[in-house]
Length: 96
Image (cartoon, rainbow, N blue to C red; front, side, top):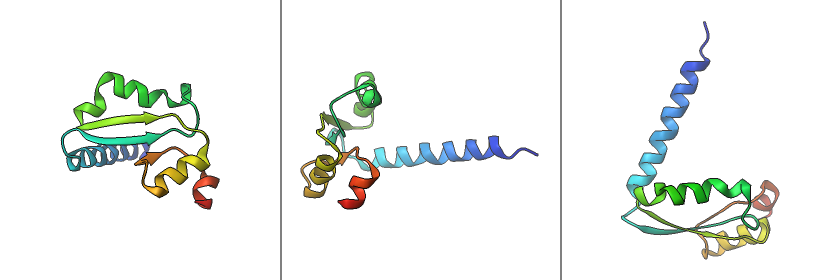
């Protein structure tokens, strides 16, 4: 008996529910910023694609994507409150 498909379906359902819950708690057109860990590249494409397709706007999020200059800067800006979210490597997060 293979339980993996059911597990994947349950995990996906939980992920979607978490996203919808998060979207429901955001007021209409809340300004949110995310600082990248480095200059924009293909690894950050999902942020730009989702913004271009209007997925953030549909969830009531006005997303500002900020180019980064390293994970240390990204962690520092979130810690100081000047950026809401950031991408960073694990070592920088641990040091921060």
